[in-house]
Structures are given as C-alpha cells and as structure tokens.
Amino acid sequence: MDDCVTNLGERIVYAVERSGLTRSGLANVLGISRQAVNNWIKGKNNPSTKNLSDIAAATGVRMEWLALDQGSPEKERSDGAAAKVFDLSTDILEDVINGIEQVSREDGLELSAKLKSKLITELYRQAASAENSGLSSENTLRAVIGYAIRSEGAPR
Image (cartoon, rainbow, N blue to C red; front, top):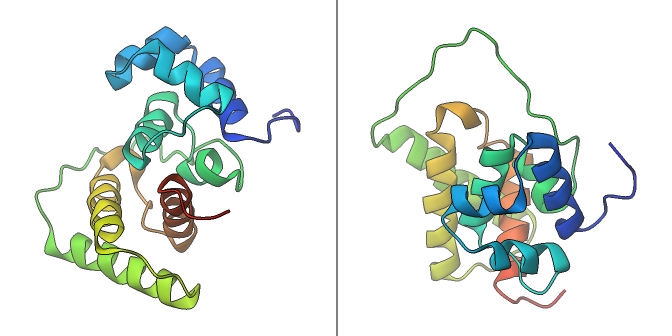
C-alpha cells in the first residue's frame, strides 16, 4: 500500500479502488448518494459509524485500518470456514458491552448514553457477522470508539 494514504478520504478511495468498486457502486451498495461518498473523500463530512462499517465490509478492508489507519487494510481470511449465522446472543452482547466499558474506563473516556447505545448496536452487529469475525478485539473496540467520538463532534 502507498504510504501517502493518510486521511480517511484517501483510505476510502484506496479501499474502493482496491475492491474494484466505483464511487457510484459504493454509494449504491450503501444506499446513499454519490455526493455523500464524494463529501467523505473530500473531508467535508465523515461517515457515520454504521456507514464506516459498511464501507469496510463492502470493500473488504479492516475497520481498524479504515477508521484509524491502524495496521494493514487486508482482512485475515480463514478459507474453508463455514459461515456462521447468529441469533441475538446475550453472550456476544455481554462481551460487546463489557469491552466498551473496559476500553472507555482504561482510556478515561466519558461516553454519553446515546453514543454507548450506538456503539453497542454497531459492534454487536459486527461481532455477530460471520464475515467480520474477531471484531470485538480490543484494537477494534478502540478504533470504533475513537472514530465514533470524533464523528460526534468531540474536540480533536
């Protein structure tokens, strides 16, 4: 990967090009306008946490890389693994909630109830998804929480 990919807009462009999608194709997959994608790329707006997760899933890049430029963009593959389908799992939900609480406590973060709710919903969805196995790792939690705080307008 090119070392020049430093901001979120550039990472989105890289992910889209790497996946073979076009900006219009990404917009269609996400159910949004091409203008919204262009605004993210230009840095005029930031995607929501859900849209960020959907971009990562649609383009096959890791959420930590897309959100915070941590690690490599490539997802680890487990070839031959059967797809898992999860019903609402209290174990997964408990792990997500405990992970958010632990990371926010360790990092001294005060998260609003609204932001915690968004994070729990999104991280549960990701953790229960077969193609995003391992998304409840500490690095992923930090990446998603950090991105969500910045996109909520917290001071930088």
